[in-house]
Length: 127
Length: 142
Image 1 (cartoon, rainbow over the protein chains, first blue to last red):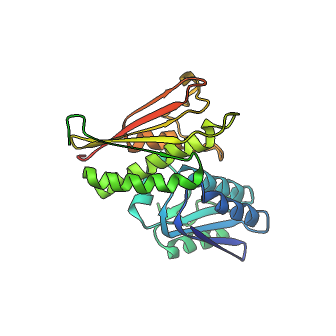
Image 2 (tube, each protein chain N blue to C red):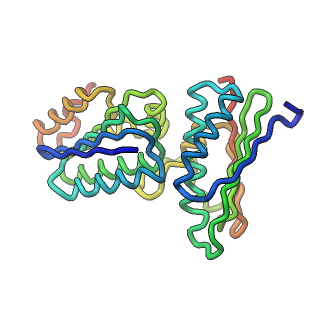
């Protein structure tokens, strides 16, 4: 597993390759917690190169989303792999974590949230 | 294959570093059993969750060290049945979380819920001091 975190303009972008389970996911949690201790309000998690996710990683994303929400921010997840999308769907976290299939969709979503301002987290979501 | 099916048993250290090994083995056996790619992916998630439960909870309050996780795979009649056993602290099944409830707390995963949703015939046997056994099945059809 490799996780690369970049922070710019209040957005933390995390790109993960490989597998996320109870051994590897805590490393990602530490990175997200550190980012959200700074001036980050928005989190974009790119899972296009991720092979596996489990419930611990979902819980970490939910936690990151909650922390972002406390700062009037939110989280968006990019995932285009069917077997991972199934885990999001079955767990009921697909909408909660704003899972989209392209990086452009995620960037559009975050741009809309920023423009809408605090308390307007539904902005940018398709009806 | 005999009447009881093909039986594969193995043990792994109760250590999070070996959960990926459980997934790898499961993928190989699932292919041998004829599971579809989707069914294999479901099974990999389920075995990972079950093994994680052992590494995270079974030996949390134990002074006796960590005994290995025992994995038993049975391939029979178009289905793969997996048992994941530990010799940890166990628990009173009355305290099992409602598996129809999703838990979104950060430290309590959705593991059991995912296992139930992704697999069939899921059973959990446990008693305080006597370890835990999770059994689950995936069928080749459906």
